[in-house]
Length: 233
Image (tube, rainbow, N blue to C red; front, side, top):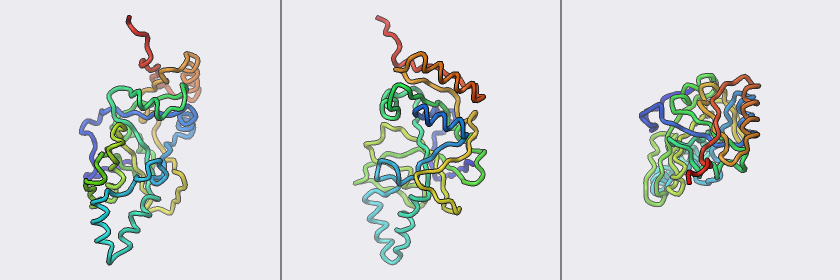
């Protein structure tokens, strides 16, 4: 379930809109299993995930001189955290469609920060936290390390187009081992507010998604993205 951590920054408004762009197979897996897949933090394409900026690392090296386990803890902790990434935006993002959907048969889930928090209630075995990612210069700026989640809530400035908020699952206190990731129980009806169909998709694809969602017993608002709507001249 979701736990509040006062050290972790979140938008003040719980109605802040967030998006997840994905392909149809992952969407159907979410609906069929009613579980949200979360990637292990060190399996992301960005090799800096869960690491420190240069000024912070220099500080940690000094502290680890007489206590090497201090540094090892942060290295191994990356294997015990799983992350689900969401995009903060009041509107659809053309860039997110391009990056996170491989073809015209993708779709986007629209939700809010508040809905994410409520959707995590069914998961009783693993605790979740939600935080907004900070984008900094890793050569110059400092990442605090007085909270073990901070390395996972900072990224390099080159990623700031992502405007990311992430759900974090921590399995440090459990006997669970994760390979590429794990699935957590979620309330699908809370998680999903609307579904947007890929802007370049055909009408048959929208009808297919509507039919599949209905047959699985859900009643989401589904509409096609208007990013490719007809021009007015």
